[in-house]
Image 1 (tube, rainbow, N blue to C red):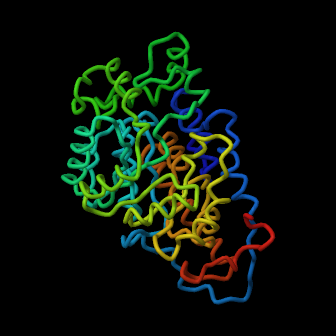
Image 2 (image 1 turned 120 degrees about the vertical axis):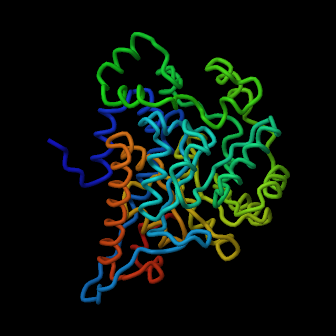
Image 3 (image 1 turned 60 degrees about the vertical axis):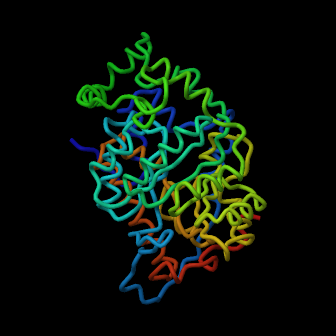
Length: 384
């Protein structure tokens, strides 16, 4: 009997049963004490909504645009590493579900399926997220591959020059594919659906890197290359170089400070994403929603401000929109859907969020997002 899925939490619970522990934990964990990870959700939940009644609620719409692209709702699938380890061919399935629904999909540099794999199953431009590596020739080639795949935007992540320590990944011995330890083999024995899917695909390593980066031809060399390549010297001069090389729409991800937001504007980017990397980098940083109003006040009239961090419902999307975000991103939410039910699970996730967004907007007495601002929120519950 199929489970009845009514919310993102249902998808999370199902994914936890179906995805091997090391990959579920990779998606569902933060760094160090996970205080920032928890704060992302808790601070969103603390914001309360104003219910209105006796308002004409016919002809409602959740439609919007993100960097000029029409979207069914202001929600994009965030770039998430190892997506193809939540479910076989995960990036391809998620991209296909996003395209059919009418929202952007963002492919991570650290994806299992390659840029070309995702291009082969999509008809509309998807977005590509770039990590800056020391090997600039590899980065140039990666940008050129994204151009060749007709990617609609480049999402440049700036908050992962060095990798935050995630205790669960270290304890689980995270690797792609899993190392054949006794613990891992016992765990995999309880995940037959996942194992069958992986047996049926050839995509089990980082598709954008293996066979493309110099000297990377095995799991061992890949691991060594990855740990050595994230560039701690990354600076705004590199952003200028990348923007020139790319030549298309550029989104800066990882902004938590007003001064950095002003530098993002000065870089000529088309949008910035207020994000603490899902609580996976600086533990003890503020939640994304706590920072959002300050970033919007500082630069919202000069650049499109997007939001990432803690979204688990359509209500969360509406709250971020009301505080000035003109686009939001879901990472864990869609990964839960993917791990639970594959492509159908991603679609279910998007359906849940859109329905919650629509109903919440209606309960607040609004018919379309252009009518939504901070007046739909209870003032004393807002971030200060």
